[in-house]
Length: 257
Image (cartoon, rainbow, N blue to C red):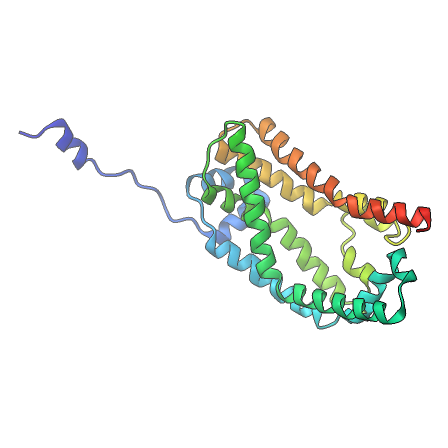
């Protein structure tokens, strides 16, 4: 005689369905995010979408970096800081060399920086949602964050195409190559705060924020409104912190120090 426990053991596990296709998910996130993030919440993945994100970003970065005169860009960056005008020429030259080397290393190390940023964003958002009673684990949060980052990759591809079409690439071109925000209305040298604020209101960045809201609502099982409050609140905090540097630069320039 079989027992209820035997019958339970004999019951086949439910079919999890076909294995998700990351490429289809990338397209789905951009054009049908609700259904796609619901699928990601059930069966998160991250390896292939992260590899695609990093490789495409690296190729674009290398292509642009080979066309950039990092020394000239570094000198332009020094010129935006009124403090460097008071430094002796040899000190400025040293700073230019160091800044140029840092920019070049950053361009080629973009995949590592991308992974670090995604880990931090996914972890912070997961912590924020868990503090408000949401569900989910880090794999789900990391997967949602990667897929929600693809609008930024689209902007990066557009930026690379625009920059490669130019005869020369200046620091101003690098700061805002795609006019998808209001930053181009302001001079970053004389209006650093306005430029930073205008640049933060970027269409691709807002698109990513919207995707994070949808994705984390699916993972956390919180309402879309609660998800918007958490993601939007953290996004505002990050942008306020990013304004500190331009604000100090503007205050120093205004005081003539």
